[in-house]
Length: 504
Image 1: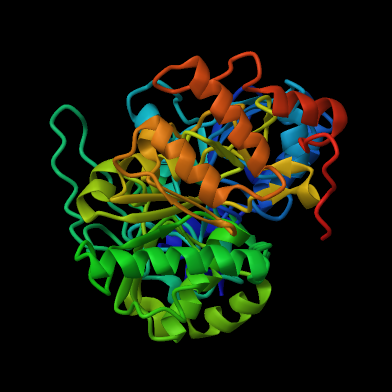
Image 2: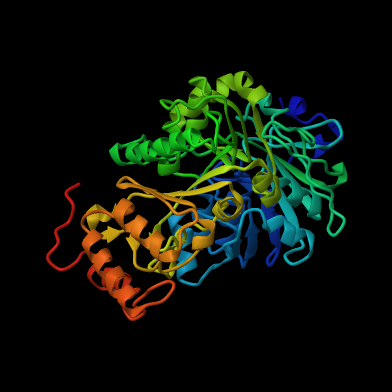
């Protein structure tokens, strides 16, 4: 079995245990690991490193594509292995260490990390640890269910450790399109002109002599935790579908729309499900993570092609899709994230980007990362890459959280990830606000009227009226602008005095 997966026979001598492979990683090193949103991460070597960190001084800077599965970030955080983490995470234990100041977290646009590596702003990478389906006869590394930043990690690292995962189907070979941009300032245009454009190699090209160790593993990717659509997420999807139908009637779109991008998580996945019952067809996707909804759209005959950087599925959907991966393969591409998230391509293809907000304010600024303005949740991920460059930048969220104790629409966001200049459409289950070509005062009126939960609408109307009386292009009562967040911190609720919680 090993020899079928490792076609360059001389590399079979490099097969070692995870513990032995991990010995290539020393205290203070910068390590690049595969993995993008719980898909395709190296699995055995991180566990071995975490075990070592419990018995000897060992701290590393860890760079990945995005979040890791199999509780790896949790294990590494609790072993105090991580001194610095880049560029995205979603683990509660690591989040706790970040917010305590133990781990220095660099929250970064996902398209930028390898550019920083390539220009020596970050790095060099000492060791890359990459999960693979196999190794070609020339030593090329065939990724598994994600590409992320793996290609550049392997190319730039001094040493490469490859984890051959026998649970990953060999039929994944040929799915990947590894294209590395040429160096600045003489970079050539990236030749991706449609989601289905294949412009690179089906493997990561590295000199075979750089592969320092090979570890054989048999651990599955973690299943995603997306929930099925509920009444509120279905309402959000419905508002978006009605808006898009209106855009078709106005002649701004056709029923093929534009290539779609969707962020990760339950709400974005549920919104994508809304396209199944819509009048739109012959759809394409140019996105980061291909979730359950991608394959549901394929099976419904709605989606023609999907380009992403990883495949992250629930257990039920994984068990359905992976045995049939060859049925989908001609309609899929997995790319490096610097290509899936590249601003030039996003702008050229004219994407409809659908991402999730934690909160937004009455002028359209969006917070997607920080609770109460201070505590990191997961990170900005790729939402900024898409929001600033998409043809239509859409942000979705439920209008309230914690059974109504918190409003997702506030006078002023406690942290800004996406300014009002990068936000076109805001949607909650209450309705949709089209902010295009509106001045700040007009934006506020549309947002309050359409997106705010009735529990909070009178209070926001009052705030805005008093702010307008004071004046300004973007009217605010600076002394009150963050008072809702202060109240939430001190009392656990933003509710106006006398208001009752929404019944779940």
